[in-house]
Image (tube, rainbow over all chains, first blue to last red; front, side):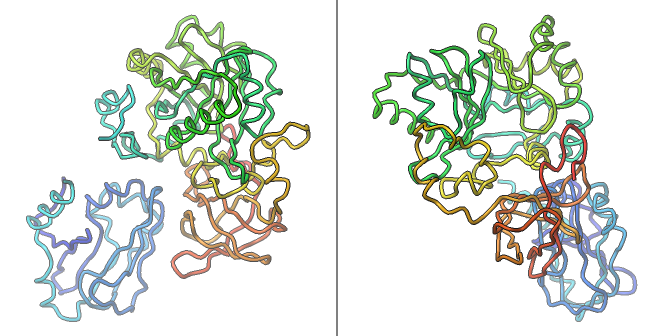
Length: 129
Length: 359
């Protein structure tokens, strides 16, 4: 199980990296890609879109199923990774390298509500039972 | 408690990802579903399909029983070993199950039915056997394991794993089977490739599976089985047809014999019914993935996707959809995916056959 200690997480299996400039880089966790299997289609939110916390904003589809990706906090989309849209399998190969979009949080303090690695690990373990 | 096939421990040794598949603990993949899919199209894959049920029907009246029980005509089966695909219908013309019937001799036919419907099928057949006074013996063969060996290299892999079997495989035509003691070798499958479905005694299955792997066969999970069968344009029971739909609206008119006078269960209902829908192939022109239950909008009204997936061979999304009659291959339709209407094209299926893209 790969859960990097320097990232933050959501209960809906997104990972979040807080960048030096305060923006958030978002992707789906290794655990999530493992559950979904081979990725075949990814659709990111449009740059400039304003998201509410928990809003459905992107879609990842594996051969098996479609899954929504949710905004970890409220904010504005400031970048979307076109590379993962053209190579969805990169999420399977490197879930933490294949980021999906970047968010400028509406309120930087919201980041404090995200799970740390230990809490996310517990969540994954509890879901496995 | 999930049911296990005789190969359950073998799958676990191989590191398969196991899932609850209709009450059976089955391998969905052994790593990558897409890689497994390509293995079957390019070389040889092995599937554990022991959750399906072989069923032996014995007695003097088997042929008479089956002439009445199923929609296809078992009188097409005159040579020992010949197989027939058919639907078994209820009185309303809905599909109780689809199955393969192997004719072995006049007092022995073997059927293979779907895993999820096995108990329902057996109860229905026993009822018909009793109601019609046929006096047959129906024997579920859970003592057998069934392994599908599929792909362009299937014959070589089977010949190598089972020395001497080439005497059978060399002359075994597609959709025919041969029995050798308890071993049963059928040249059938569900992938659109050449291949075999081999039944062996359950206790021999792990050894046989390993011999097939030694000969170059690769384990394939049920995930790839679904993308392969959909590319091959084959129906899946419970998705593309069920008890509420007619085979005539499920792309299976070719299996329903209305030419002879034979009276079979469901015939009257089929003849009285009006066919207004068809099962068509779809290819998504926009980006996304087609899935079952998505709505299809055509110039003649709405339809619904019954099976949809991403095709690893074609690298685009394909589907089977039940749509109104009068929509021809080549025409464009729209599919609603998450509140957006995306463009798709109606095509003839199969999509892929013997490794080649057909559309």
